[in-house]
Structures are given as C-alpha cells and as structure tokens.
Length: 196
Image 1 (cartoon, rainbow, N blue to C red):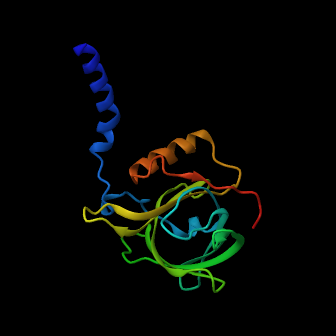
Image 2 (image 1 turned 135 degrees about the vertical axis):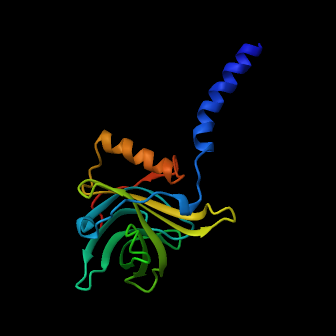
C-alpha cells in the first residue's frame, strides 16, 4: 500500500513541480528579443484567444499592422462582437502603439478605439511574446495586477498569417509560450469563417 501511495505522490509531483518553480509575475514574463516592428507589419488572423473580463471580440478576428511615417506602429482590426447579449455584428477597431522603453521594443502600449459609438476605447499593454514574423505571433496584455505581481485580468491572442491554422511544429512552440505566460489550457479557438 505504501509503495502505491509513493508512486502516486511521485507522479503528482512530476506534474505539479515544473509549474511550481515558474514565476507568473507579469514583469518576469519573457517577450520577443530584438522585436522588429517592420517585419511584424501586414495581416494577421487570430486562431486562438484567452479573453479578458468584459466585452471582447468574439471571432473572425484579423488585424492589419502598418508603420506610420513617424515610425510608430498602428493597426486596424476587425472581428465579430456580441452586444447586449444577443446582437452579433462585425466591428472595426483602430489602435496606435508606443514603446515606453526602446530597449524592449516588444513591450508596447496600445491605445485603441472602436470605430462606432457603442464600442469601447482605452489602452492596454501589448506585448509580443514571440513571433517568427512569417507564420505566427503570440501577444499578451495584462489589464490589472494582483498583489503578488501576477495578472488578475489579462488576455492573449495567437495570430497566424493564414486563417487556416499552423503546422504541428509551430503549435508546439505556441503551447510552450502559453506555459511561459501562465495561460496554459486557457485558450479558446477563434472561428475564421470570413464573416467580417
């Protein structure tokens, strides 16, 4: 009986221990080294997302990133959103990005606005956790922190250059990055039906 309990305990620790040593404080989360906004420009399609609290784009999410004449990045995005609990519409959003610390260009601040009066406006951190620029990108934002420095309300989007998905090798990278930002198992697929 004791041997069985020992085997169970060792098995349980092998599952729990790797995550126990990981820090989930937002300031310790890794971002893309030497992020290049020019290579990031172009169209991206959301394949999976972890929603924040409140209203958020539901599906058919895409974003087109551009570099302005002054060197700043901006984006126009589309996606379906459910308003008043029943009304589903395609929404257009616009965003502008600033880089508070030039030494960490992957950590940006995004100011966004809905292009219709019923959509929200505001600002969030916008961190590019990882990208290969040609196939995938994973972004992260934390809207509020807990006392221990971990995220209380945050979101993340996995983008692809193609709305059809990502190959298995890249999916493995994405799963590892989801772990690193303490959001493993929290993502939902994003429908890309061309509705917007």
